[in-house]
Image 1 (cartoon, rainbow, N blue to C red):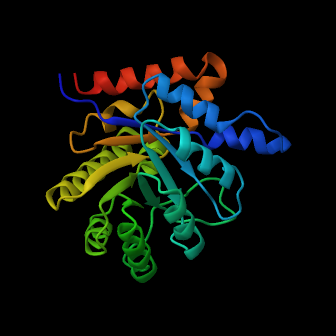
Image 2 (cartoon, rainbow, N blue to C red):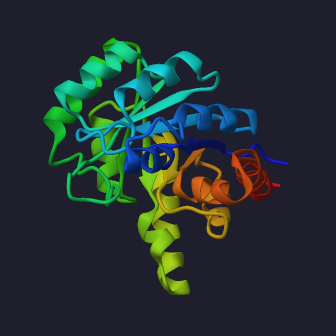
Length: 244
């Protein structure tokens, strides 16, 4: 049996539910602890400029209590770099961000935004923080990510997840595989995520070069029905079966 890829659970949507009422609950920090108990290897949160779900308080508390690893998704801005250097997550994943989007709609264009991304990576690296870039499955973006000295990439799997035909899904999976192999060859770590759920995750999880999957909406949605521990355990089991 091969080693399963690591599971990072994104608890943003727990905070989304809380912020609808500006209440004290449900608490994404409590959810994160339940995810860890159930076998999650990492907790992921996205601190957005508009603070629409995760708040600064959440990030501070998570850094204190997370026993696995903390992955902070954020834009490559001066404000966010400053927060990361203060909080010191294990990994920072730089993502594109637009106020009018419901969720992150695509990967970073590293080639066209090289200067701010490279500057953010430099500051984070000096602070001892591992950096990953959230990119579309595009070989040019892998090369650009390598040039700016990122430690790793996270492949945006949205187009694969939204595919409606077998051919489209197969084509998108081939792109993901090519990018994962290319990044591995140049010494970069490889993660993937976006739109993955219990019924489409296996083909991506079978790609040996992918070391980590970050999954949020699907796990939180299932947790509403069965609880966090069963929801996380079920996903961990799928990742284990993928490389059996």
